[in-house]
Image (cartoon, rainbow, N blue to C red):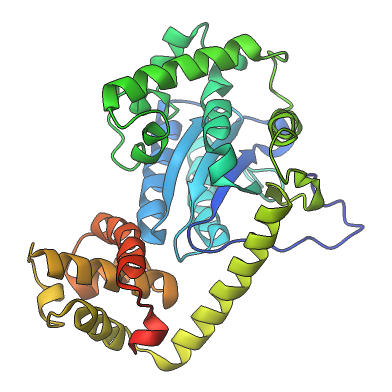
Length: 340
């Protein structure tokens, strides 16, 4: 993916609830975007806040002195909105603190919509090996001590409650200890296979790594759309999901109120609407609340904080509820359209 040079229109961002994006942000002209620990910590705090607000998940991340890599799975709030709020607030604080003016980040952030089934682990490894390959740490052991990436959280060495680790570790084993051991071996294997120790070129090199893998996959050929990392079949599924998500939001937004969605979720599991808006751990109530979270966030496009207020739960609980609500929807065979 290359920056727009003004000779052709920018392509629209592709997004839908549950989409997985590899996001990269660079300082303008390669300039630093982090100077000290305070900068790193503020960015992480803002990232956590925006993930909760958007009902999104971060599966991998690395903050480097002059750029950022993140693997983000979106909820109902589009990626562009999450990134706009995150980068705007961070840049404003950075400029005030360091007494500078002008743009901090170069052009728009870059993003690739990725096929999670085929590329999740390759992307996690690429992102988490960035500090080692850039020479910020000298070894895999040193990478564990690097505070500004998600590697240590996957190993259980550092707490990052906002980082989604379960999905990544489950790719290696259901046993957490075994999964972490296999994840470590997977990263070590990536270091041995690397032919380009200097990844400052980053984006194009990442495309090269993945395309090597992609060429071995059935239906590969992600070059059809520079916004997508995946084969022809995945591209077709993306187009269908983007179109369906837009139709669903427009249709549901025209005729279903948040209160009606809550009542429909309660009815689907056989409880009252009041029950799912109060603290209650009955299985049916938990299922109904999860279904309400999913419909409110993904079908009606409500912000996580607004849903949390409506249901009397935390923003984190809404994010978890959306994930569970997707499963409940499948188990019950019911959608918002059919339930209202």
